[in-house]
Amino acid sequence: MQKKIPMRQCMGCRERKAKKEMIRVVRTTENTVCLDFSGKLNGRGAYICPDPMCLAKARKANSLARSLETEIPEEVYDRLNKELEGYARG
Image 1 (cartoon, helix red, strand yellow):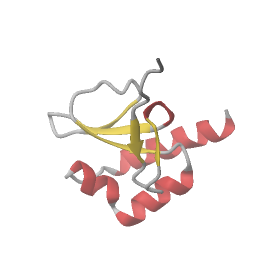
Image 2 (cartoon, one colour; image 1 turned 45 degrees about the vertical axis):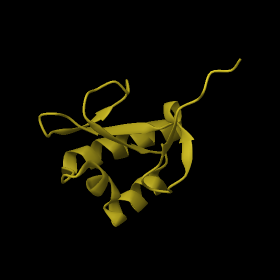
Image 3 (tube, one colour; image 1 turned 30 degrees about the vertical axis):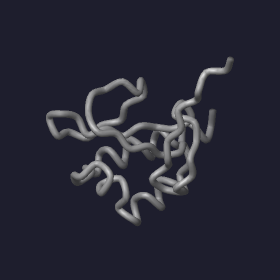
Image 4 (cartoon, helix red, strand yellow; image 1 turned 90 degrees about the horizontal axis):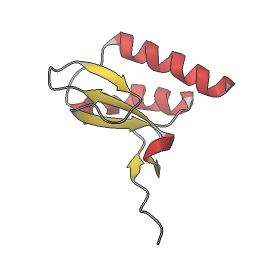
């Protein structure tokens, strides 16, 4: 019997994909926003595809901030951009 694959919706393109394929942005219990590559940090999470176009759409629509119910610092967007460049190359 196959194990159920957890699915999450991208905040940019709104497609549902496997959780492991996506990048998690989390608002921790201390109200800080950071990237969670382990998928295990406590807090409210939102997911985005490893695609720069999805990040651009999510940023324009402000969907990450709405989903996490807080403002997203510029440093988080910068770090996401750098991570997505790494995904594109590798």
